[in-house]
Image (cartoon, rainbow, N blue to C red; front, side, top):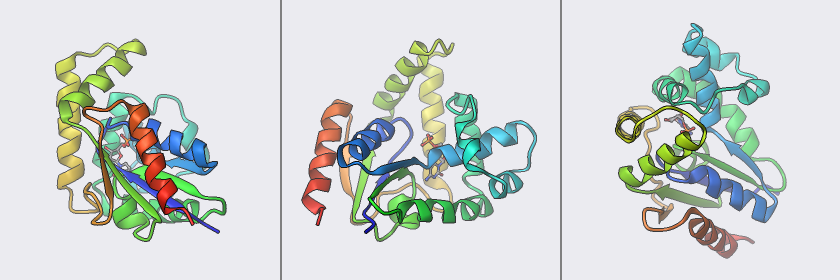
Length: 202
Ligand code: DC
C-alpha cells in the first residue's frame, strides 16, 4: 500500500534534512524533487534548451556533480516557471509517490499539484534571514566564496520567482500542517514532523 508524505516550503527552510529524517524514521523512500529542476537547470547552463532537457532527463542526471551550487539553484528556479518543463516531470514524481512501502517527496508543489491526495502534507518555512544565514554557513563550510548579502539576495530572488509564478506557485496546501523553523532547530522540526505523520498513519 502506498503512503505519501508531501513536504513543501521555500529554499533553505530545512526541508531536505527534515524529509530525510522523516523518511529514515519510517523506512520510506525519499525524493528531493528540487533535484529534478536543478538537473534541468544545470543542462541549460551548458546550452541545452529547457524543455528538451526536461523531456530527456534520466535518473542518472540526478547524480550529476555540482547540482547544489547557487548558479544551478537560480537556473532551476528559472526553468521551473516553464509549464512544459513542469509537465515533463510530473509522471516521474507521481510514480515515485505511489511506490509500495511509503514515500516522502519534498519540493514546492507536492501537496498542491503533484500529490493533492497525499496522506500527510507539511509546509516547512522560516524567515528569509534565518534561511539565508543557514545557507550562508553551509556554503562557507563547503568553501564556496560568498557573502551574507549575496546569499540573502539569492534567497529573496528565488522566493519571489517561486511564489509569483503562474504555474504551480509555492504556497501551502489548504490542508498542510505548517512548521516554522525560524526559532527551532531542524532536529526539533523533524521530531515535530515525525509526530504529525505518526498521528496520521493507519
Ligand atoms: O528545493 P531546491 O532549492 O533544490 O529547488 C530548486 C528550484 O527548483 C526552486 O527554486 C524551485 C524549483 N522547484 C519547483 O519549482 N518545484 C519543486 N517541486 C521543487 C523545486
